[in-house]
Image (cartoon, rainbow, N blue to C red; front, side):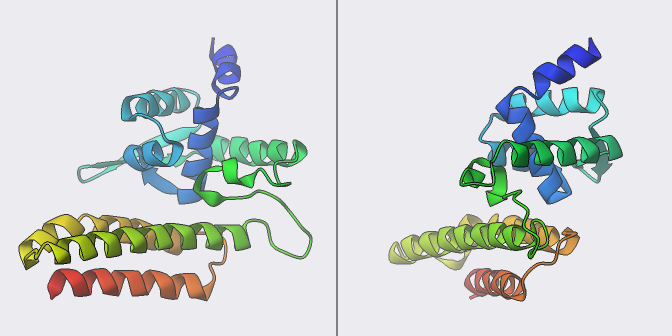
Length: 195
């Protein structure tokens, strides 16, 4: 049964995307994966449970948070999937279908994924900045007080930390401009909440 299920699992889009997301974050949790693969939380946890049974991912609990990360076997499977994607020609314009904006194309002059991981992180930062500024503008027009702003924008602190952890844990070199952009968003959010 295990072998047949493994074949069925990776002929489906969501499990494949989930593995790629876990690979890009290194260590994350189910709700982040759910958001990245555009799935429901229950479907994502079912996928992760099956991947755990196959020895592809492992769970660790730190405090009240249950993290998921790839096992050594899972890393090998992701590497094989990336090679398969290259073989199918995904590097030729279909990279937007890969989660988190990653492209697995390889060129001799650029280290694999270095440019793309920086671009993907920058996109996440830009999306976060846009959300923060939009909410801030709307709430300011409504005359929101400090407590309301804190309540509305406070949850974005978690997103800022997630991106920061992604930058710190990346095994690929991250462009300095991305690090600076992340710091700017963090300071802007702190500034708005603490004014």
